Image 1 (cartoon, one colour):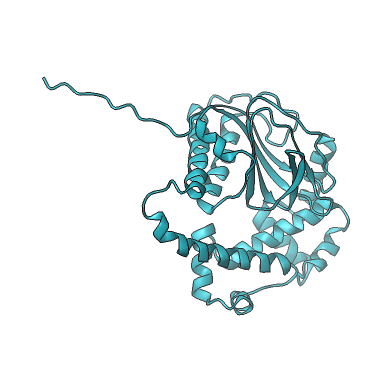
Image 2 (tube, one colour):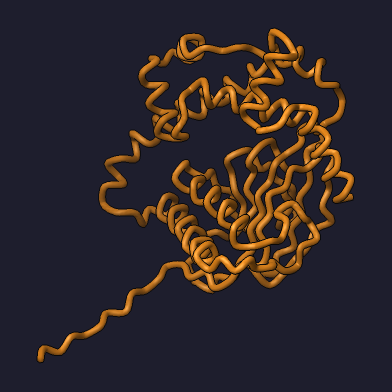
Length: 297
């Protein structure tokens, strides 16, 4: 009988446990008191700007960016007073020496890595019965879904590996060849989304966006499919609704005023599109968010 020898596989990142997983929809005046703990924590800005504090300074965390806090590092977080941010916070144990790479870094999260963050949140809802918006969570309560638990570990490790290889130059030999293409696509995507954010009060079309940015329709559509998996106008529609949600949470205008401010033809059109995206009417959303804010104070 032939003798077979096993080859042990090394892991760049081995996430042994998670402590908390949160998805917060903060009010614009939200302020956290700050903390330090003996595990890693990642904060990711999903919508709106958020201010993060570490190493004695405040930094702006823009949408699509993540910051990592090393064990025992004091850190803090607050809204900027102008927008109501959505923030994902994941805390975990990982003893890999490669984690030092993430010390004191604020990183833009490419689309592939963003998908892993979404997967972590989705699986957390399946693996635990604990509310993801409860800021006082000290322990996650398991639901018994072992597969979802393992997926969380895998997705978190993939997220770390994806960011590490993207920024450290440790990817395969094709990376250098692809760098210039990726850089161009990044620029197109960032310019387009910035233009959209500045014009959420308008009914933009693909032609209007491509003309403003001097980009062909086909190139614009290709970039958005690559980065988001969505069409340009679908992405913009979702962005408008996210902005509307922010205005609702800010509490400075009623639903009719928000519809007018956002440039919708009527409150009916606004409510219909809002419900298609969010799954509830603006008024229902307003009540649910108000209840959460009151509950979290």
